Length: 323
Image (tube, rainbow, N blue to C red; front, side, top):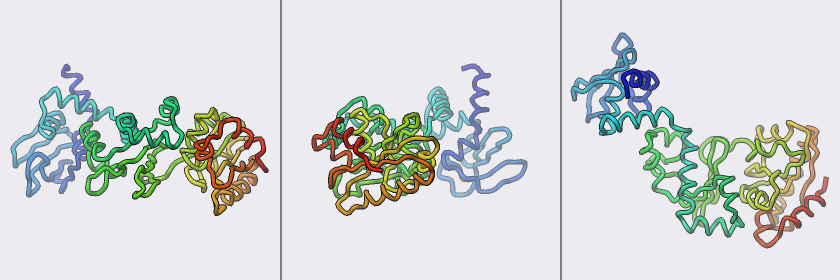
């Protein structure tokens, strides 16, 4: 790499930004824009690490080492110059953290028979569907190591909710579905809560950009409901991840003339039907044409297909849907 390319790399990665991404916090400013803090390169008890953001340089009065962002990467990661360059290039071009985590979970899926077995129990067998939904598996105990090896600081993993305050993987023994700005994990263990999102909003309707083009849309509650319907050929299906829509999801359904088929769970206590009735009323107030699909008692779309129903039988339910 020539000097011009090295200078461009250092320009693109300000030293202070890289330090802060690796949890360095300055103690105090000391004039002329310079900052002083504890040295991240040795066990520092009093601030001795000087950073000059204007010159993009550092120097430690304790361990007497200094240089630019490349030199810091060498010392901090304990690597040679070529490896430091590779780490900085990688860090500069890192994809969004949740996307990287979802990709790791997706790689794990076919390495764990219990995950594939669980999907088969839930009626999910199509390789095309698994790729379409980017379904993954979180075995636990390995995501943190993978992401930190790629250059993500532990602080960023914790802020994203991917690891706990104690540094353990948040998701363990869960099938994972990537969402818009979040991840949903379904537990394989009966002793753990079945549903879990990362911190933050669940986002809009699932796969909405692919579904919004259809004049007729099927809305279901759960991602496994979505999966069996998509697998059966109903590609105009979307999912609200619960029976109560957030504001974004409600606006999405109302943003264009369409017919919405509400295929909510037929819970024995009637909660799914009540939620569908309430939503239907609110959508009609916004001019949306709504039909309520009546599933057999005690069934949701997923269990309907798992117990032997086919696309023709579900199509008959759509055609019989009530206003």
